[in-house]
Image (cartoon, rainbow over the protein chains, first blue to last red):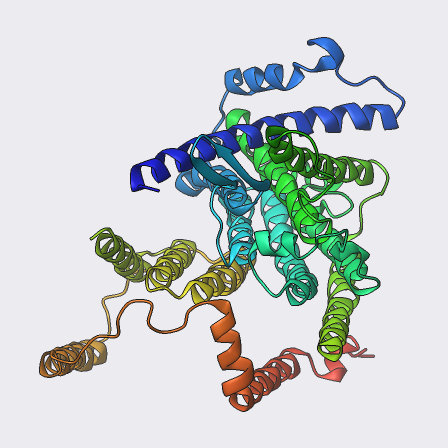
Length: 341
Length: 174
């Protein structure tokens, strides 16, 4: 493949993936509003379009036309930079996520992924760990006590849970023997999904899921934006599009987490494949999307079912329960794998 | 060519970040310049073919340690530093020291300018090779180092935890 073809294909893939991601983000907000409404026996958005399906569009227009307030007491450079940091890292993380096998159009065969790296999983972890800066700096640069407390909570919580998150992923790496997300999925063929690797894969999955919820600041771990104590936490002083960017970053991070759960524990795009060639190359994408949708739904479901933790409970749970469990699970998995080898 | 351009670009960012770290008066700006230094170093590692080291650099240094730095600065609410005139000792010893160091480095590099450089990607950089080195060839030093770090952590905990009398609360004076 010549360098020009490669560049053109990469650009097309990047644009397509970002477009799909942003649409998914917009419709996760719709999903959240709709599901939360049904859980509370309401209707949710119904006015804009059928089933309120055009609501995200209306929200977007509203965000653009709202007044963009910048308080006189903020640290301006960082105040403006932090939503950008948050959203940029949230969107970049999708670049190594594979969606399916590969697709052949004419003479060109290309994997359904922006780029396949042999350290794919590490890249995702690195990018998401940089995303903390957006939240922390937003809290600090707003120069308001609620924001500062929110930012402090966010950074402490994200660092604490990142450790158990990382440790919960290592059993998967041991089982697959690779950091490449494509290899990890391919190691789970014939329904040997890591989730069904009882008990180690299952335990690792639940540790991952809990830590990931804390990492994305979602209920029951949404302490950084606990509205009953901190108004809105780190984004209290933000309005209009800047606020929307934090919103987008949060939902994009949720999509990344859902993609990773699917890839690492639920066999990614693997599923029954049949029919003519074009259907065969697109069916895996459908399975992948369905699994990701399930995890997005789970996010919403959990949010409207569980109450929020207290802050000391959150920290104690992370350090005293989740971390030892993750380490024990890792050691046990390593021993079993070494014993069977 | 593209490789060299990128290498120089990230090198320039790295040096600029390091200088900015010293020049800035607000601790948070200094900390963020250090993040830029770490991130550009990671990019340099990536360009040298050490992708695992690059990823770990971002995850550990830029993503965890620097977040803790920023966290501490936020927690202590550190304000702007005052610019001092600088100490005489620093000027008397520092400038000649830097000059001597620079001359030494330049002299060594010029003396050995004919030494063949390590070709790009000749040394192992992928996770598998590094794992083999760490857990097979250098297993004992690796384990000893990790125990050393563990001891350091325990020492920090001991130093940070208050003596028991204080921990129980203030003494009642009656």
